[in-house]
Length: 454
Ligand SMILES: [Zn+2]
Image (cartoon, rainbow, N blue to C red; front, side, top):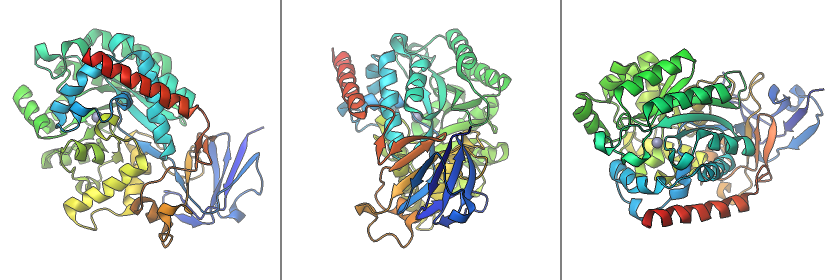
C-alpha cells in the first residue's frame, strides 16, 4: 500500500508549472513521495493517510540552493574577515579552516542545512573544497541523510598552494592524484542518477586560482565519463579576473572556453564580471550560473548582470554562498536580495517578485540539472513548503500574498515536506535536536578560533 499525503486549502498554491498557475484554495496529493494531483479541492482525493490543512498559508515548491560552503557556518562574522574583498577575506580565513575536522564538517553541514530548510530550501548543493585533518565529503553526506535534505554534494578541491603560485597556504591543499581517486570512490559509493534522487555527487575544483589547468581538464573528463554535473567559481570580482589574466594570459571567458568547462552539465558560481563574450558563450552552450547576491554585496564583488543573463536565456539559480560571506543561509532572504539588487543596478522593473521566486525554484532545479523538482505538478517529487501569512511581517500585504513573500521581511516556513516526508511542522524542525546542534556548533566554532590564534 502506498503512503499518501494530502495538503489542502492553501490561501494560494504556487505551482511553477508550465502555465505558472497560482491556485486559490489549492492543494496537492502525494503518493510515496511523488505528487499525483495538484488543484482545487474537487481535483483532489477527499482523504489520505495524512491530511494537512494549509488555510492561511502560501504553498510553493521547495526552493533550491545552488552554491554553498556549509563548513563556513563555523566562521561567520570573524572579526578579521569582516571587511576585506574576496582574496584578503579568503587569506584571513584559510588559517581557521585549516583546523577543521570531519566531526566539524558534519556538525556545520547539519547547522547550515537546518538554516536552509527552515528558510524554505529543500534541495541544496554544497561545495566542500577543504579537507584538513581527515575530513571527507562523507561527513557532509551523513548530515544530509540525518536531516533529510535533498543533496548535491560537490567534491571540491584545492591543489595549488602558495609555493606554486596559488592563493591558499600549502598545508590546506591536496594531491591531485589523491583527489581523483577519492572522487571515484565517492561516485561509486554515493551517486544516485535516478529520478527523485536524494543524493548526487558533483565534481567541483574550487576555482581557477586554486587548481591546475590539467586538473580542470581531468575533472571534466571524469565528470563527462560518468554523466556528472560540474561546478566551480568564476569571474567573481576584479581581482579574480586579474589573476586569470596574469596566470593564464586570458580572462575567465577564454579560460573556460579553452578548457571546455561550459555546457548543460556545467554551472559556475557568481559570474559577476562575466563579459559580453562570456554571456554569449554561456547562452550558446547552456552553461548555468549560481547567483549569490548577499555574498556579492558582502565582499563588494559587484552586481551580477542577472537581468541580462535571464534575457539571454541562461540558466540562473540562487546560491546563499558560504556562510562566512553572507553571513546567513536564508534562501528566501537571498531571493529578496536578488530582486532588490537588480533594481539598484537596472531600475525598478529589473526583476519582479515572481521572477525572484522562479529563480529560487525552477531556476535552481535547472541549474542542478533536475526536472523532477522546482515545480508542483503530477510526476514531480513532493518537495513543498508553506508560509503562514497571518504573521506580523505580512500584515497589510495580502493584496498579493505571493509577492509579499519577497517584498516583505523574509520569514521561516511553517511546513516543509521533502520527498514526501514532513521535515518541518508548525515551524519546528523534526529530524534533529536543533538546540543541541547549535550548542555543539558554537563550541566547535570557538575551538577553531582558539586553534587559529594558538
Ligand atoms: Zn563560493
